[in-house]
Image (tube, rainbow, N blue to C red; front, side, top):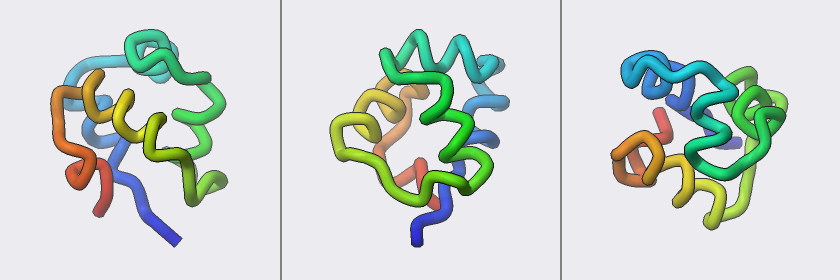
Length: 63
């Protein structure tokens, strides 16, 4: 089970969950699920989109 650093990265950039979802072209439910731990896995494509939107490397999304 992966633990994501997404909330901290998102807040550091000043994005809301909706803003990050829009910027990354993913669903808000994915962002919420990864932040709360209800989603422990997602596709590599979604991780790439989130990392790009946050201007970080994919590995930085994980604790």
